[in-house]
Amino acid sequence: MKPYAVIGAFLVIGLLLPLMTVMAATLLSPRKPNPIKQDIYECGLKTVGETWVQFKVQYYIYALIFVVFDIEVVFLYPWAVAYNQLGLFALVEMLIFAGILLAGLLYAWRKGALSWV
Amino acid sequence: MTAEQVVFVLAAVVTLGSALGMVTTRSVFVGALWMIAVFGGVAALFILLGAGFLGIVQILVYIGAIAVLILFAIMLTPRVMGDPNAPRYNRQWPLVAVMASALASLLVALVLRTDWPLAQEGAPTITGFAVELGKGFMTTYILPFEVASVLLLVALIGAIVIAREE
Image 1 (cartoon, each protein chain N blue to C red):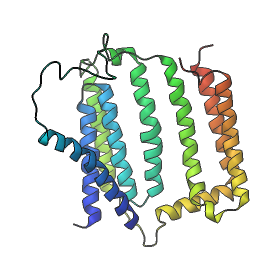
Image 2 (cartoon, one colour):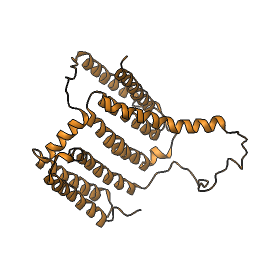
Image 3 (cartoon, chains in turn orange, purple):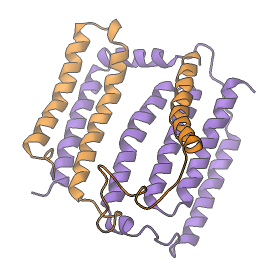
Image 4 (cartoon, chains in turn green, purple):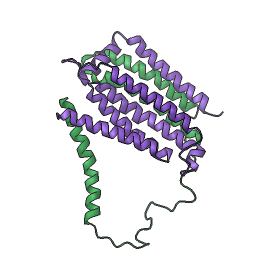
């Protein structure tokens, strides 16, 4: 369980750090709000119409492609962990594995599934 | 309480609390966000059980991919996205209540009847298991490993063919 203690500590610090920053700002900053101060500025723009809208169905294809390559990572992970104990053969094998999926990526690209709609 | 018990209680509270948040929220979108927290809690439980690789896969695939798919599906559905104040119940709720209670009692009965064995000392560690798996992929299970790649390729092409309108 020892190595997980480090991950746990990382998790706790990772959660605390942004929380503390926001808390500090809330506690320390003086507040005198007025409409102009609270207005959207810089990159923000007032929204036009409803924000909870339906998005284009075509976006789903990006999610599907992403899932396939996410599963690939699950296969890459044990290979990467065991890499030091494996020879050149394993590297070639993994290249074949990635190559087959690369063909899929090429297919998606050629079909225009990667172009933004 | 040992440290592991403290972590278990924390993970269980996060999992159950998020699950409660998921089923009680009005917005399906917010429910999906709660579900991601549930996945995180379950990943912690997997790691506590000594199934570290499964925990990592849980984070990678469920939080990384499945949650994204579900969020996409919600955002692409007009009726769900269009009305955040949709009613919480529809007329099928009695049927669902009966089915959910039946499933819950079945699960509770199973949990109570199961004899839970403890992990043996010297069970594979997280990296140990992943290393063994990696070695297996590159030696004994080389064919299934490459076939999995072909399977993913087929899934990718199938998804593109079905989802794209020509």
